[in-house]
Image (tube, rainbow, N blue to C red; front, side, top):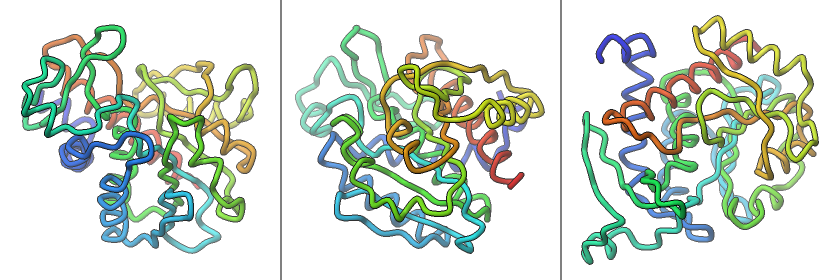
Length: 268
């Protein structure tokens, strides 16, 4: 196990794990993202970002000279699993909730609508963890959008002032289930050119990864694509992991996505 962690970058692994530990413990159903927003704002400010909350409740942040901020990293703060009060569920001994700790990673688990065991909040706290880790372990300039109410037909992203997107060439939306997929079309509408996707695929191969193209459905990426020329979503490691090492597999998938994002940012 230590060899795999080292090959993915020990600093990245430790940073992502620490952020996931904290984020998984913060309930954030749509419209109640305050705790996650405060945590993220503090982490980004500590990493040298200028961060502010807009009128819609979204968290907007940037680091570096404005001309160097060509890429937006986006994720949503509300969770797909509507768990409104983790403490109450724990006190009532709900069979749908557990607090397993494996390999040092504390997770909150529940049952999704299909009966699968999922990590509550992994959608999209895995995406948030990538952004916070990149802020923490690199000095790269980029812009950040952490939206609210993605579960409410992307209401948060739709409310962002268009001026925030000025000067951006790319957006990587870190919100996609599955493993090592790149989405650049939503319901048949392309949000990025073949050139940009090919570029990400080349980075993937250079890193020893195996990302592939996939079509997607409505998400913040679709909304952002009306403001930013090149928009793609990346798989970030949330979903069902039936193996005994589920928690470890999830974090490694998140680290792999982070490495792909870092490769793109470093090439600008």
